[in-house]
Image (cartoon, rainbow, N blue to C red; front, side, top):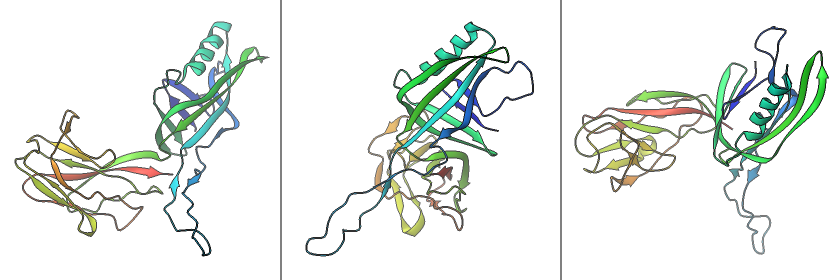
Length: 255
């Protein structure tokens, strides 16, 4: 079963049941492109002077561009017009949308914005139903796809079974005073007495310490050496000084 949800719009790979009154938006044959593919590699090329080849520099993944080419079915002109408006309105304000894809027993998601011009065309009548065709393109600046979220307490190995390194979020319990979190290879996060007494988190994606309400706490981290969670075993263990609790919150990550 394929189900794509974005901005309140649902697009299916096939009808959810065998009802003769099938209507809605559906992905056409081979109409979902760019989601299951890899992304373009991006790297800087620096030639070696008076030598063969280039300097070896890191390679990064470019943005993920995916498109949905599909069909709309309706029993009335009013309903077909409603479907047209839904398609054309997806991401029209330029904001980010959470695009969720349920397929092959998994539910993965990305943040994306609309790219290109959406297209919706009337396509006549088939078996008594009004039909339209549509095309929507989306661009995810972060090409990674995210799935299930798990918490791993201090001292236990944090693992995930995606296919790309995952970035953890440290969930720190209530307590008093500063503390030090020690991760893989002796990497540490040292937090001073500015740490809130309430439960809070340290976000390795945006960088920084955030209180329970989601507000950034300035000048709280004095040593910052973040890490990632590789795919599969043996996993990554982290510990914390003092009496506070700690968990590594890991989101399954794919490319």
